[in-house]
Image (cartoon, rainbow, N blue to C red):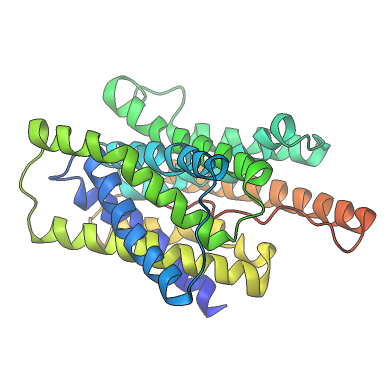
Amino acid sequence: MPRLFALSFIWGWSFLFIQVAGQDLTPSAVAAGRTFLGAVVLLTVLRIKRIPVPRDRRTLLGLLFVGGVGSAIPFTLLAWGGQHIDSGLSAVLNASTPLFTAGLAVPLLSERAKPRVIVGLVMGFVGVAVVAGVGGDELSGTHGLAVMAPVAAGFFYGLTFCFAARNLMDIPPVVAATGQVVGATLLLAPFAIVTTITDGHAPGPRQIGSMLVLGSIGTGVAYILSFRIIADLGPTVASLCTYIIPVVALAVGALVLDESITPRVILGGAITIAAVAVVTRARQHAARQHAAAAGPDVGAPAPQPEGAG
């Protein structure tokens, strides 16, 4: 359990580091910096453990795809959103990731849409709507788009999980994670360079420090820690991070950045987290039933990290 809280602490703080790094760096530069530094950490682990890297064209293209959809796009969205909304609000909205995973798993993984899952999805998106302030004036203009950015990032995280569950299950998780961040770095590099030249500013010590922590620890170390928790404690325990991360992010944002925590965010966040619990338990129960019916050699797909900032 200490590792679970450590991972939640790391990813909860990541939303703050995203916001601070984005004060001088462009969104694509923030995303590219964190994937590059994460790739350095993960490649070092692969080299030390002498874990082979796949070289076949199909697998490499698959890793490039998840690099774009699972890291490059959502990391850029979170960085852009972090320039316009509070870090704690971004974390609460991004907690919708498991809801998108469950919803997309129905058409993409042929999962049955059980009544409890449907109820949880409806309940969850009501919670997101409450957090976002649907029906108010705050969703107009840039602020409205920024509110939708972490939600859209959750959609892309969910899409990545479904793709990986169908196409990358024969690859060790740490290798898949490494390929994902390497692929994202390659895709992001041109955009990061161009936007930095045209719109970027020379980063200060706070921005550089935030970028280093976000990339090496929030992406590299956190991915390793996440997969170790899944391997040792199981996906059910690992999924508890989804409930803890927004709490950490809200507290850190309030204490460090003096962000306000409104009753609307608390209420909507509570509804969203409760919905995630309903959906997650329903899917885990269905996965256990499927595994029991299929036999001891068949199980549910190993989950990818969800809810990561």
